[in-house]
Length: 133
Image 1 (cartoon, rainbow, N blue to C red):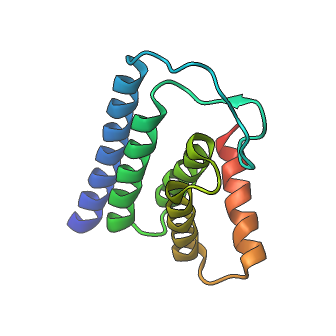
Image 2: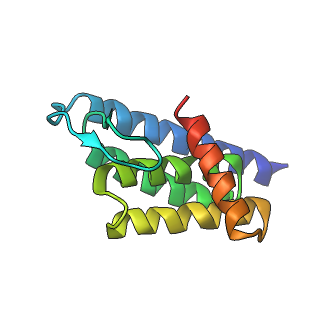
Image 3: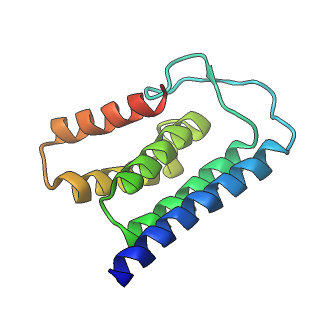
């Protein structure tokens, strides 16, 4: 029971850390508007202020949650958001986007087990679409 409580506290702390980093990023000047051609976001969507801090914060928080509660809903959510934002910021061919995609795939495999490539893609697409609502 103590271990479960510790894990829940750690997970809550990671969300607090991400919130703090996001609030700090909001205080930075916004970059000039730039349309992102992303298969996850759709053409014409705009990235928010300080995308570098956001993607770095998401990557760090996703790694922490993945180390504490691999395969959890929070792990899948954070890695999916990291994947979406990395692709919007860097484009599909960039190494950061490829790393984010691998991290997201690993989180979904940890959550749902080994599934076909098509089903894995559907699971990630569905979660990415839900995150945009």
